[in-house]
Image (cartoon, rainbow, N blue to C red; front, side, top):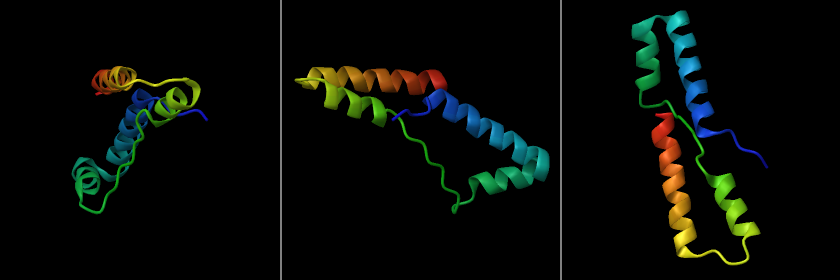
Length: 79
């Protein structure tokens, strides 16, 4: 199973936001994107974590903590 990198997910979101601005105008697009019924879904790191757990013979707490730091770094880089 392959996932879409978080940076690419952010780029897709920006692309859709720009398309909405072009089609609806700035004010209506902003209202649509910020209204309470709008749901944004993004998956970050699940594929990598499941791969780590399923392929490693022994997963330590330290390995998981290192993984979390990598995921947080990826989020920081993307945003």
